[in-house]
Image (tube, rainbow, N blue to C red; front, side, top):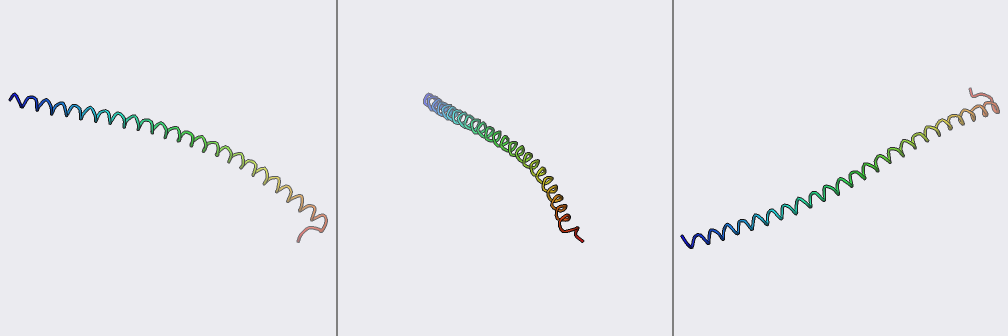
Amino acid sequence: MATAQPDRLDRIEALVETNAQAIRSNSEAIAQAASERQEFREVFQATLRVIAEMGQRQDAQLEAIHAMQSEIRGMQLENRRILDHLFGPES
């Protein structure tokens, strides 16, 4: 039994070292995952800001398009009146 005790202690020591190494490895993986998660969050937030900005630009462009449409309709009406005055109304 005297020789079994050192073997057992060696096995326990090896298990403890293996567990410690696994814990270190897991800790590093967790830290890496947390870092990647933070990077993803920052990229996602930046993407959301770009989308919001694009939406605002689209709203402004839509307003400009509506204003141009109104102006074009007015010009069409004015052109029709001029043509009617010059050549008479269309039949």
